[in-house]
Image (tube, rainbow, N blue to C red):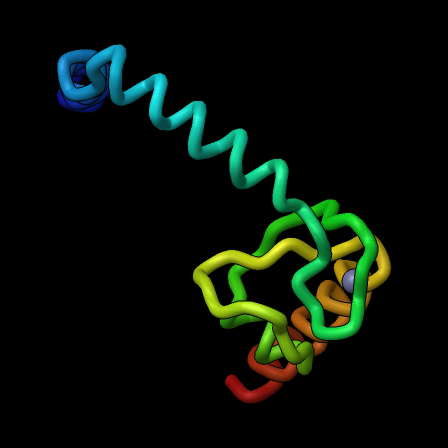
Length: 96
Ligand SMILES: [Zn+2]
């Protein structure tokens, strides 16, 4: 019962929080982000398929063209990224 109340109140507060102007600017921002979808790894010109946190990308051993919180990776680099982060997770598990 408490859970339902929390759910309902969070839905209601979201509705009153976002004005239509906010929604429009959010869409514009998202569109701009989609347009600059090129792989963020240095020396790569392929189009970015996935966006990941740039911290994790650096951890995976990529040198990035630009600083920012998110970075787009092309299919190939995303595969490398997945491999690198998977190895990280496995090592973490072994260390425990
Ligand atoms: Zn790439």
